[in-house]
Length: 174
Image (cartoon, rainbow, N blue to C red):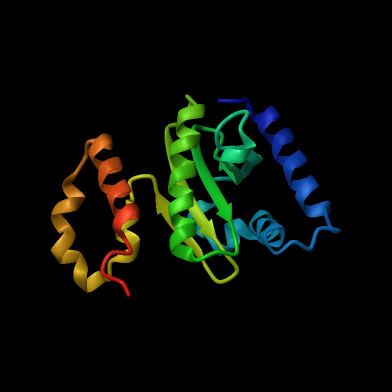
């Protein structure tokens, strides 16, 4: 993990850039600015993530066409918070956060834990990399019928289940 002096400098640079970028009125950028300015007060459970670690990071290094994540925060001790800000449906946004969390883990070897936050203009939704896509589309009273799926621990089985859910989520609609 980077030393505190480097982390503080990096945090200051990222925050200064975002806060002082007052010409940008893009709705998604305004959400990013809101997160930079109010993360700890809106989500007190994330106070420990006091360093802005990255902004507009490449999800696949060298391939901006594969996506750019919005914000990464760290506690400086190996815990990371991936934040994605969009003006899209909360369910789709949470799915994107999970994908970005998995991608961030692949490109960073010094991670002890990783958490996600999906932020749109209406909500700030906490997520973990252990949450699966299908959980976002099932009502609480239906969850008991799907309980046996939560026992899957093999990452490959989880990916297969999640990919199946994405492909077949529209079956039966219409």
